[in-house]
Structure formats: C-alpha cells, structure tokens
Length: 101
Image 1 (tube, helix red, strand yellow):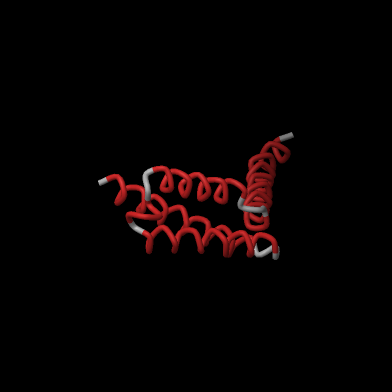
Image 2 (cartoon, rainbow, N blue to C red):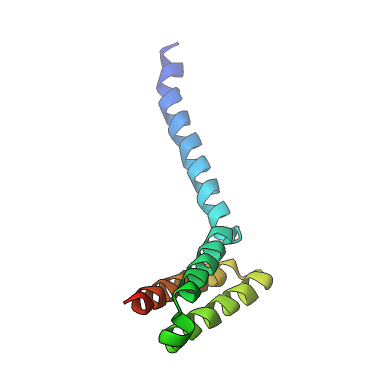
C-alpha cells in the first residue's frame, strides 16, 4: 500500500500538466471571437462621439485594422486576427477618448 500513495501525487501533477498543455494549445487555435467583438464595440463607441470627424486618422487606422482582422479570421489566421483586433480596439478607445475631450 505505501507505494501506491507515493505515486498518487506524481500522477496528479502529471494529469494537471497534461490538462494545462491542452488548455493552452486550444487557446492558440481558437477563433478570437471575444477580441473581434470587443474591437467592434470600441469602434461603435468611437463613432458615437464623432471620432470619424474629430480624429479621422486614428479612427480610420482602427477601422482598417478591424477589416484586416476580419480577413485574417476568414483565412483561419487566428493569431494574426487576435493581434489586429486588439490593436483595433486600442486605437478605437484612443479615438473615442480624444473625441470626447
């Protein structure tokens, strides 16, 4: 019996390591649905405060990045889509803040 209890912690750690590996592998291949949604919402919020007129350069860069993210998403390039969507969101937030001032 004592040998059995010594192997339980090792098995538990191994099981946790496998689970974490699968989790991270899944994240890398999953479509960036939330990031795309966040970028779209940030862009709409910027539009509502007049960003296309008040800060057209920043707004337009954000809009173009979102279009590129959508293209990457359609092509199955999820990492590129995620990165571009996050950049688009950040620029849209910047445009909204600058427009509101």
